[in-house]
Image (cartoon, rainbow, N blue to C red):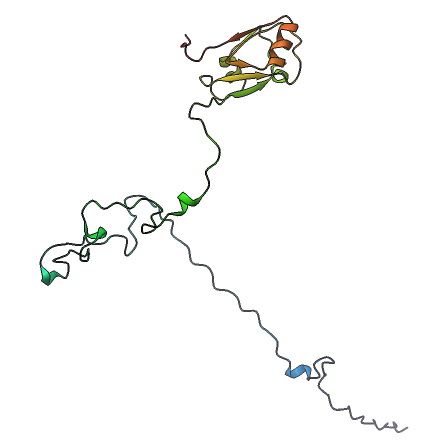
Length: 201
């Protein structure tokens, strides 16, 4: 029997059409694609220790001294860059801060109000409620400094009456408010005032 040879049908494939981007309406084959380039490796930075031995003054910071009165050929002779006559050409001329050429300066036009005393006393404030954690029977500025309630034992300390004193304690300070003194005495304690004029031992 003869083998029947089937003829293969040759099917022509449609030609490939370039895909079109719907939004840009440009063939995908023609769309530019950004290629990420690798960044070059960073160069190693040498550490420089700055100090007075390697610091240099910026350009223009140091200028040569201007020589005055060295004759007309120097350009700074005769009047020595002071012009001719007048207030600015005299020796010992002084212009105070805010000088406005002789007219009444702004500082004289401004109103001056209030008063600041040079002898004002500035106290370090401690309230009665801050003394509850102290179990000693005698409280002094030195003890308050150790506990961190004041910064300097040599500066004046004032006790204020915010809070209540329940234990009988002797408190030494430079000043007491009326309420604080009454509360301390009511609890059975004592108040000792330090005189600023008399030196402490």
